[in-house]
Image 1 (cartoon, rainbow, N blue to C red):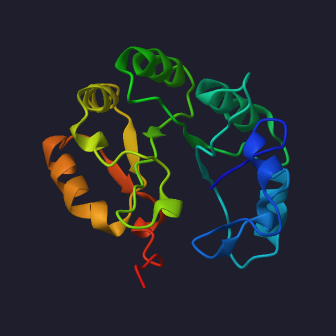
Image 2 (cartoon, rainbow, N blue to C red; image 1 turned 180 degrees about the horizontal axis):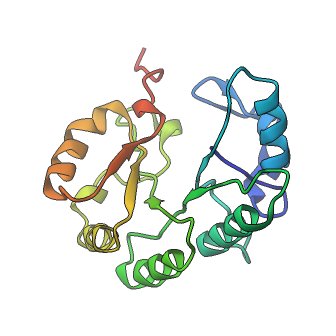
Length: 196
C-alpha cells in the first residue's frame, strides 16, 4: 500500500481530471493519504486489517528523497495512534543504478527497524511507452545495478519486482542468479495491460 501527501509527493500536483495510466483515472488519488485515511477505509470494509506494508510511492520533493520517505514512514509507524503504528513494514526506493549512492542509501534504510525490502521500478513495457516507469530495458544486466542487488542480498532485504509480463522470463533468470533474495512481484505483473 502507499501513503503520500502533497507536501512530500510533488507528482500529486500534476494529476488532472484527464490523467490516466493504463486506462485508470488517477484524479481520486490526488489527496493526502495516510494512516487515518487508510484506517477509515478499513473500517468500512469486511477485512480485519492487522498490519500493512508500505511500498515506496515516488517521494519527489527536492528535500525529501528515498531516505526521507522511509524516515517519514518510520515516524508514522512509531508514533501514529490513529494508524495503530502503520506501516509495520516499509519497502523504500534505492538508486540501484549507482552502487556508491545505493550503498549509502541502503545502509541508511537499514538503520530504520521497519525497513524490510527495497523497490526499484523496472517496468519497461516493450511496446507501450506510456507504461514505462524506466526508459531502460537492460537493468538486469547492468553491473552497478547487480552490485546493488548483491548488497540487498547481503543485508537480508527482500526485493520488490515491478515488471510487466513480457519481462518475467528475464526476471526468473535473475531470481535464479540471486537465490537468497526474496523477490516479491508487484501488481501481478500488470496482467490488465495488453497490446490490443
